[in-house]
Image 1 (cartoon, rainbow, N blue to C red):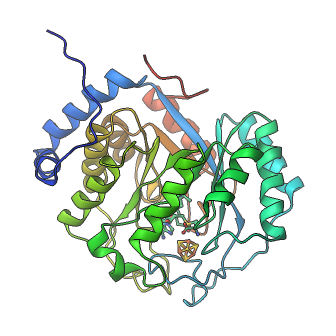
Image 2 (tube, protein in one colour; image 1 turned 120 degrees about the vertical axis):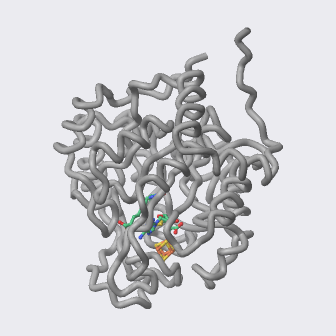
Length: 327
Ligand code: SAM
Ligand code: DTB
Ligand code: SF4
């Protein structure tokens, strides 16, 4: 008998703990099975990421190379022009991307000229037929609405870590601030992109708790980025050990089982992973990646477009054209 996997928003921590701690091969097998029930396993969404405003951020996120207070040596750049952004988006589309994410090193969106410019960029990128995403920090309800009206498709705002571990990593805002922005994004009818980072010195219980928060939201985020800490010299977390790729596999597989319909994105960390290591993540249910024409994610390295093309060829993957659910 074929029973259909149900989408659940009532997961308990104990259930998630049991899933997460399964023997890895069992876990991957289960995740891969669920992945096939809800998605086309040969398709991976390619989302191009562009830093439209880099560095000089007032926040103290201890993983981030763009926080002004750490001496990371990155070049601070003012907001890019709409013309440049749209030209990059067009090239991204020509290279096979179906989604384009604009990131700004801001604590929050302010109702000023920069925001008006962002709204123009959103219109421009939407006009060339890409799914437009932004990640600009905290948002009010009316700002979320204005972005939606300008043609924004999705908003990225990560929980980053568990509620319990949050204050160890960031002191300039709270976990609840993150949840209320997500709430504003939802209310405005935008697609939600929210996930986190592993390798911040958190425990397995913290990872489980973060996944619990995400998978018990009233609606699962449509997209869930799983980042491995990209260690940036000068930040407080620069000397933490590199994340083991099996940990990424485990995290991705658990996210896939808990949120079967969501796109699970293998995000930061790919530059330090081989094709073999990344293929385990795809097997475990990852079906989206970030690319960038600058070979940098935001301020840390990301694989070259050519290397990704080769990887897709070897694994028999193709870029997803438009997100079409299996049923
Ligand atoms: N400033 C906005 C914010 O923090 O919401 C938007 C941009 S910020 C770079 C987006 C997300 O990137 C962060 O929430 C975090 O999850 C991720 N990120 C930033 N630096 C990272 C790093 N060094 N390694 C892994 N992920 C990172
Ligand atoms: C997300 O979850 N990962 C992306 C995107 N959302 C904005 C950012 C990763 C940043 C990695 C470190 C850097 O290059 O600054
Ligand atoms: Fe600023 Fe975002 Fe970096 Fe935090 S993660 S320091 S808010 S750019």
